[in-house]
Length: 77
Image 1 (tube, rainbow, N blue to C red):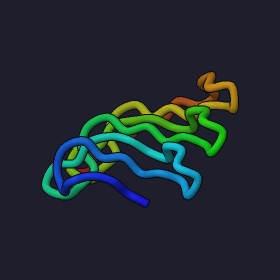
Image 2: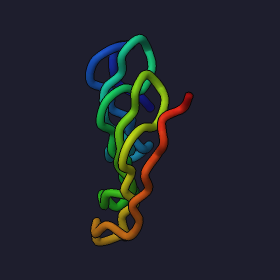
Image 3: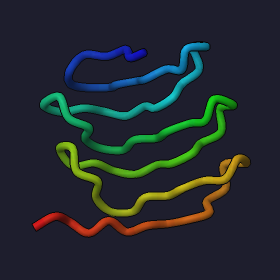
Image 4: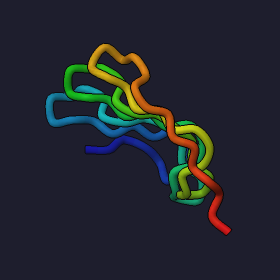
């Protein structure tokens, strides 16, 4: 389930109404900072997009929302 316009703030929800993901879109593509959450509400992953492409630092979190993995995404040529 989703709630948003093609551009601007965007939020996706699980069937129970809890937040699954949130961030912004530009030109209909993921753009800017995004976060994903587990059904229990804990943060699962976060990072940045540039017009649909993952860029920069991406962090994966454990169930207590503590960082467990940091990945640097290299820009696409």
